[in-house]
Image (cartoon, rainbow, N blue to C red; front, side, top):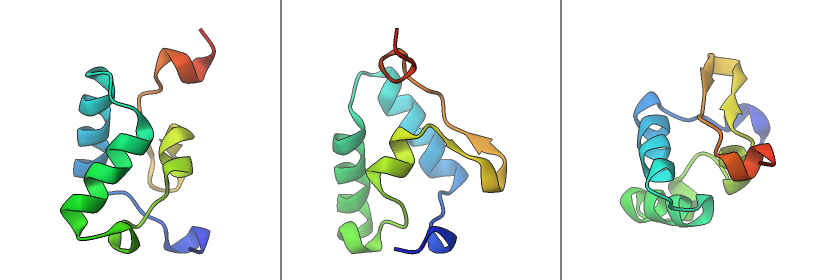
Length: 71
């Protein structure tokens, strides 16, 4: 997938943040989003995009969990 074609909706980001607060890992969240979208090929971002903690091109930043920050 080309970096320019990746995108996250504000609703997806909010849902990811809520699931992270509940202790769910990025790969499981990505799997859940894939099940909602009808397959991994329909999810317009990767687990790496989720793990990086932000989406600067659209001005939206994911809340980064303490394990990602190194605490």
